[in-house]
Structures are given as C-alpha cells and as structure tokens.
Image 1 (cartoon, one colour):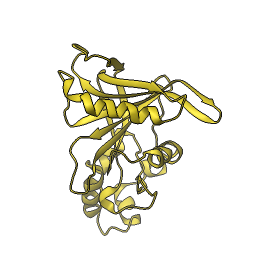
Image 2: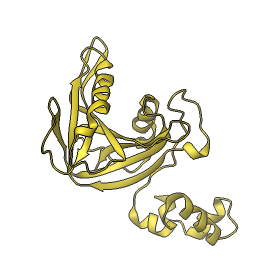
Image 3: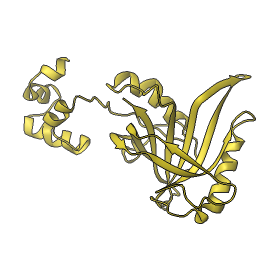
Length: 222
C-alpha cells in the first residue's frame, strides 16, 4: 500500500535511478508495461527466483522465470491418463504413449505444445506418497474422432498465473512448482482458485541446440 501511494518520481530515486524516465524505461522492459499502468492493474507479480530445474542451482538471466496473468477459454484435451497409486512411473508411461501416437490426434489447436495436467480433485497420501490423477495430452478444438485407447478431457475457462522458463521436457519441475506455491504466491496479490484443484504444464515441442524448449506452468487464480 505504501508504494501504491508514493509518487513515481520518489520510487525512481529510491530505486537508484536519476530520473523517472529512466526508471520507467527499465520498468517497461521488465514488466512490458509502464509503472502507472502496472499500478492501476492492482496486481503484484513479484520478481521470480532463478532456478535450474535439474540441479536447483541459480541460472543465468536468460533462464529466469517470466510471470504473467492470462484469461483462458475452456480447454479440450485428448490423450492418456493414470493415477499415481503405484508411483510416478505412470506419468512416464502416459508421455511415452502420447509421443508415440500424437500424430493420430486430429484437429489440434496448438502444434507447439503438449500438456501435462496434475488433477488434485481426489488428492490423497498413501504411505507418505502423493496420489493424484495425471493427464498427458494435446489441445484440440473439439474432442472429436478420438483415437483408440485415448480419452478426452476438459479444463474450465478461467484466470491463470503463467510461469515461463526454458528447460528440457524430461526434467523434473518439482523445484519450480515448490517455489511457485511456497514462495511466490505468499508475496503476490494473487489468490489460488480453490475451486479449480489442478494445474498444468505446457511443454514446447520445438527444442534448441541444447535440447531445451519453452515450458509454461499454469496455475488457476481468482
């Protein structure tokens, strides 16, 4: 609240800038909008920590998480699913099947990404291990002509906090997810949507020379 009331010129000087103009230029390059527009939006999206999704080491700036808010219509998905009662091997099995048969899925709406959904609606612990429903799928315009042994799924329309990074699709997102829920949300103005008990990751299909692609982690918020 203090910063919301403080003049932008004072904020610029306190932040080490000589002028409000230089502060606004740097702010816009980081947040893609002016300080005044950001203030009116009334959302606080704190700067993110740097993570190495494989070794939990700090990363160079080009791998920093990017955070934005997004409104998304209902998502239709087609793919494979399973529950983790017998361990997380079922997740790898779903992805293996999806990569093998993804070309059979018709009317895909986004060829750039495949989606992994963590459905916590029936979440529980068994022998200290988390049990939840997992889906590996492609986004489609409508769930029609579903290939044999695949299923269709729907995610409701809503508002999301979207975290973007680069990494290898096979790397665990556990350190990133842990940061998002344990550290980022408590310091932001975003509130988790408790009625949408899921989150999902979009994994880029196009990789660079390092075998890395764009990865987006979407969390439902109010």
